[in-house]
Image (tube, rainbow over all chains, first blue to last red; front, side):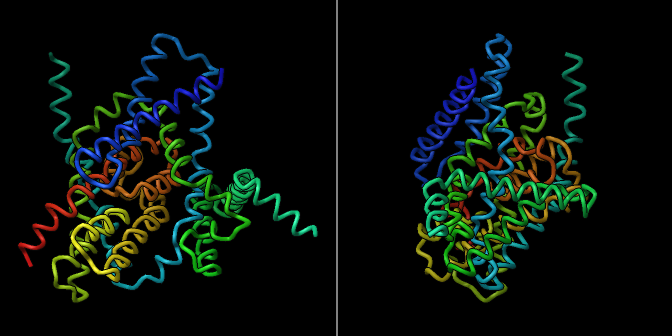
Length: 130
Length: 254
């Protein structure tokens, strides 16, 4: 049934966000520590475990896939409620700070991607020989 | 009378109205994408741009902070794009992620997170210095704002920044989020953002959840879960480092 998939997704979401809240309280910071990421990992590993036991039939999967597919419209709705007006009228120093942060981060993407790959090649070769 | 009734329906069925408005926006965006750009500019990228423009219009008309949602007729979009459904849908994209791809990117993901927080902080702090802020509290708060618009005020509140500086730091974070949404699809080919590994690194470096979510959606929806997974830890890391390590280092240097 479709609701099984939706419920699985809900349980992963609630568990992940809950763990994130607890971690935040433990570290003493007013933020959720990776709740969404933890929930995703739960779904990724839980989902692949359940499908290896063939406990997920296509109907159940549809309950997750619907939300997966509705993701872009939700992001569009999210974009429509960003404080764009506030951002553009917030002062040139703040705009420059944001622009510079984004520019530097973009530049670092290929640098880090290459950096890791050089190290990983011998690693991969090693794991093959063992 | 007709107008009143219409408004009543749109308001009391807010989320449903949101589905309708966003659906029409999506349709128009994909039509524009196919007709005028021959699909080169993703329909979702156009839709996100339209969303941001609508939000700007909403801000101009209402003076509020929530874009189009501040116009009562469109308040339902707020439910649709709010944190709850956004997180739910982001998590759902994890279904279909390949575990091997994640393992391959694991270490560089963690590295990109730490580097990402530091790079954005240094950029923001540098601009603050260039604009004549010399006290460690203001410089740290503005730098933290360039990390994300949540890290900025959290840090500022913890170390006692002025409200003017707090506002600047929130703005810096907002500019970052919006810029990442808009620019990512154009920059993606230049920085090799076309595989799960680089998406994990991208998410860790940028970190702004909404920016990464929007930017990757506009680039290639298949990359979304990989970027969002690392980005999910970024704000928390920033909140952890901002008022502690980053403030102490800034204070020692100034």
